[in-house]
Image (cartoon, rainbow, N blue to C red; front, side, top):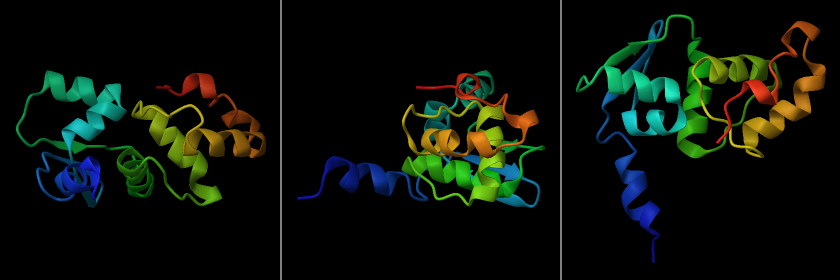
Length: 132
């Protein structure tokens, strides 16, 4: 027998009920306000202040590569990220206030690679990332 999430939640989160578009340069990402709001106070406050039916959110300083990885993380709870993209992904998560679950995949990767970061970027530590 299929679980509740397999029968109801996953089909809901496919392309049905899309109610927001994130725009990063030439790339657009259809998404769900509910998912973005649960993962990020930034998005939650944005959508509460602007109750548009289907907003297009222009993320001017966000590279599409990092937004794609971040969306995978928000929807799946995990993401495969090349080491060279990890710092950009973490900076994007921090700038959009995406919650990183303590002990979750991004948090563990951050701890593994923090010692390899340039000194100037070491201020990006676990305390500066929003935790759930």
